[in-house]
Length: 129
Image (cartoon, rainbow, N blue to C red):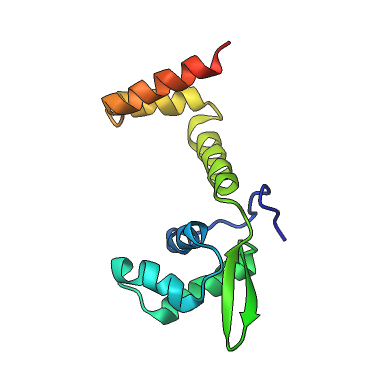
């Protein structure tokens, strides 16, 4: 089983990520409660959410615990740990492990707003001694 800091070995799909977001927002939810959080926006039904929850349990991303006639689902991996692992994988796979190449690409394709650039500048100032 994964610790909150340990990255997953199996990838989480976009659909599974939507379920994870709902559980990171509010842990210990039933399938019905997760559905209330994500189904309308995605056009899903309860059966889809139950399938996604089962996959996430199998991948070790969430845990399930019986609560009467229902199950409560809780994230096993912390959001920060997951995002950190996925970010590193993206930079490694697409930019040869160089985060600067990612930022340069975003700047060249005009994907960065003035607010983004200001935030990056602030972060760099904080990181430098």
